[in-house]
Image 1 (cartoon, helix red, strand yellow):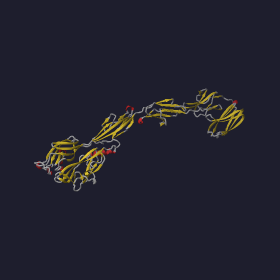
Image 2 (cartoon, one colour):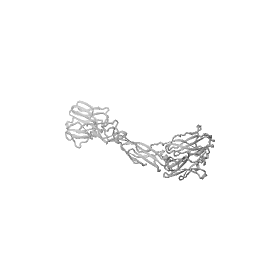
Image 3 (cartoon, one colour):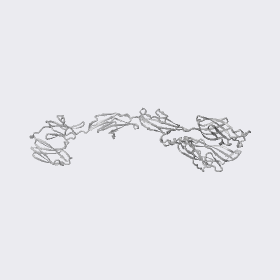
Image 4 (tube, one colour):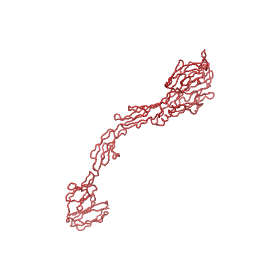
Length: 600
């Protein structure tokens, strides 16, 4: 609950218990005004629930001119309590609380301060009754003047009610909380219209469900009204408007004698009201009595108008009897013969009405994905993910939960391992996610090589291997080295998951001792740094080629020698080669031999 409303509740509760009396600090007179009157007659606006104070300066007349009689001086101004003040406000003068008497011989200036915390917004005309006493034969003259004050509604801080959410995607559930709680105080009533066809009168309304009607953005206007009825009924004032009573003699009124005027007062026995002590002596109507009496709205009250005769001539005159109901709220005029009384019964009910909008955006259809190709494949291949076309949405593909830059169409070409999904986003940020699609991409092995060393087949591939004989896999032959048992066509495959690369086929034959024309190969030093000597023996004169291959079968060195035999020393210098395993092969016209060397 916001602080303004909390303070308002506290004020309402306090005033409901102890009333509205609140003394104002001393006012200041503005002597810039010189013409008789009230300044200003319209006060600056007040705000409900906020403390307010404003000063009024009044300039009184020193005298007045009456036809026939001439100019008469004012002897006294008797100012009474105002009627029609906003609830929670009061008036004090520079001479104290009303009623007060001003002597024009002392000063023609006076002031009043209007102060307090108004509760009920509205436009108020405040009537201030007074009795102006003229020198003889003028006597007492009843009069009144008005001041005007507007009380503005309290500004709503943060809204008059609190929805858990004001927008969302179809469907959403919304809980509402009023910002003006009763805090257990009687007299609070609540009204909710949620805009979706549902209503409630609860302080704590039920959860509401909202949908986007017809699949388009839909706005719902929520209306919330709080009525605060914590004040009782009160008879604020009574004004005797007209009376046929007077104090003239049996022979009638001369109109020149002040004592001929009535001394009017009111009696309401059931309320304990008798204004005889405050009777307006020798004063013709209108005369006003500020009462402030609490009423029972179910009761009917009898009121008598009397003329105080001071016990002479058989007691006070009865100037009319009136009845009114305790719930006759407003200003009413009661009539009895030639007598009439205006009464004001107040029963303020504070009403706040608040509005808010709930916006529902249409839900987005979950995208379906069609896979073209396999989700497990080798590098160099691909899969295509095609999404269903959904009007009015944006597409965003993601890999392993991260958006793929630029991947915002209905199709995605997949080249890498990952878990892929698609988010489609519509109006209002509403979105839907596809199912996830795991893709595994295996690296395609390079084609392995086969090196024959002394009757043994060797491959240098780093992948899993499978040896083949005559096109069929050899059971259990999955090591990098294989020793053939029979002559024939051999091949090796490098394997990574479903990806396979085959070497070229070789024809393997066993060599007899007589066939070995190249032998005794020595690498010195071994290991070396790329500079070394290769020493070998050639049994019969022939041409030979010396080559060096890396583990991928690539030739990085080659040298030819013609018609050589005996012991041969071949200096070799390999510039800028990487450390690793290499193979030295010497191939002649009548045979070949291969050895391994290590460069570091």
